[in-house]
Amino acid sequence: MFGGLVLGTSTASAQEDQIDCQNAITQAEMNMCANQDYEAADKELNAVYRKAMASVKATDTELADIDTNLVGAVEALKNAQRAWIGYRDGQCELAGFEARGGSMEPMLVSGCLADLTKKRTDELKELANGFGN
Image (tube, rainbow, N blue to C red; front, side, top):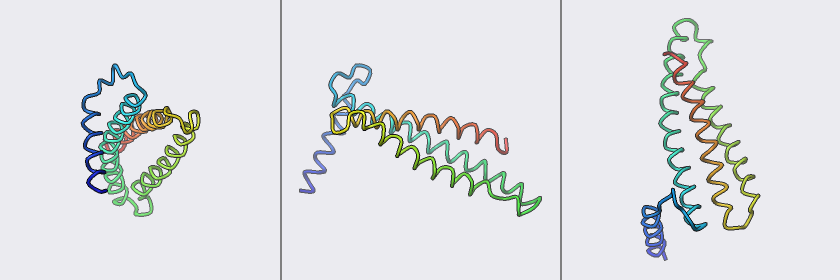
């Protein structure tokens, strides 16, 4: 059973590599392309989050030199990101209800995830550029 799962995953991955997402026709192709878009957005978000975290760490270091009671940017970013993830996941689950149980549901959810993730990435870019730079 496990081997079949691995084979199925390998086959799905090979199919995803062959899809021309600019010309996706079937719903399955559109679902896979929407998921690829989300995965790319998530990868960029994680890279930008690391930069934003480095920026707020530098801010906390500078503030600690003035007064340790001023420190807290790192914890604030962590809290904000956790809250945002909860919002994003709930909002995108809700978006899927437009086609609940249908073949379009995964595309709607992935599209929402990609959209909100790209918007959050832009926010984090501003944060990374605004703190300590």
